[in-house]
Amino acid sequence: MDITQHHNKRHWLNKKKQHSERLLSSIDSANKRSKKAFTEERIQRIAPLMLSNYWNLFTDAVMLDWPKKHCMWLLYQATDFGRMHFRMHLSPNKLTPVELASELVILTPTPVGKHHYSSAHTWLDAAIAATLCKESFIVDELQAYPVHFLDEAAGVHRNFEVHKAFFHFYKLFYSNTHDKQQQTDALRAVMQYAEHGKIEQLTSIEAEVSFHFLEYSVVSVIASMWKLQRSSLSDATTEAIKASYEYYADLLPREPGEPVGKDSMGLYRGSAMLLRRLLGVLAFHHQTTGEVPEFESDYIPSWLIKGEIPSRQAVLFDSPPEFTLAGIGL
Image (cartoon, rainbow, N blue to C red):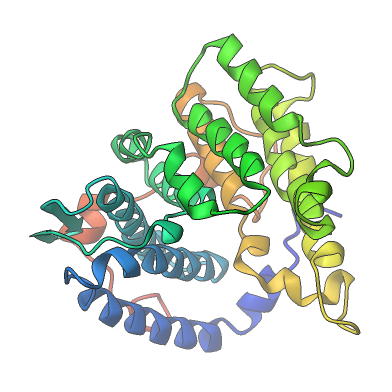
């Protein structure tokens, strides 16, 4: 696999206008749903859905090489919904300021049931979005989200301890700690589940394969950043990209008869086209050290890693982008 050649970029750009028209329609629909979200009954339930929705719209915009202003407008929306979602979870039955760009509403959101609390994946999506937007104050705010909330979300699932270990690991990374003992302990806590068959015993073989190809490859990148393994940042990043491709091309669970390899439908997933977790880790590392991998790849666009983006003020207030074909240059 040549990691500098994206498996799906040409497909998107060959029909850029057609794909852009569909994406513009989807953005319009998302914006209409967003405007209806600010009620006490709806806001707590819809916020994580809008976080995911705008993340996916952002991914498609990046794949289509839309102007940065349009891409970042979508990611700023995702960031705000993620931040507000967790803020509301930390303030049940209390008056809470809910902010989204220029919108500000003080309300008491209707709490969700304890088994609908957010997973570590939702927390990580919020932290990554804020990191790519270079809004460290939001990443700091997200640090307040406690692990026992994940306990409620996990319910009786047997793999909760695995998710708990990874949640702590990522929280520690985004806290920018330099404490070697904490780093070593957090790495050891996630690596205890890396033994062949350990996660399968707790949940399923499908979950174990997913963890090994999508989670542990990013853990390896962080371990390199922390100097807890010998692999260079570039080598660990290369292996993470290859592992992601292999998973979505060949290992993702599928129906009998579905194609694998380069024809796999799994390669059309947003998480296969833009490697969010890897991007978030590399961007945070660059913000704190200035270091980047020695190569460029459309799987992890360098402008996002280096934070070469228009500011929130410019995108949301000074000169908001026009979401039309003409506005994106078509």
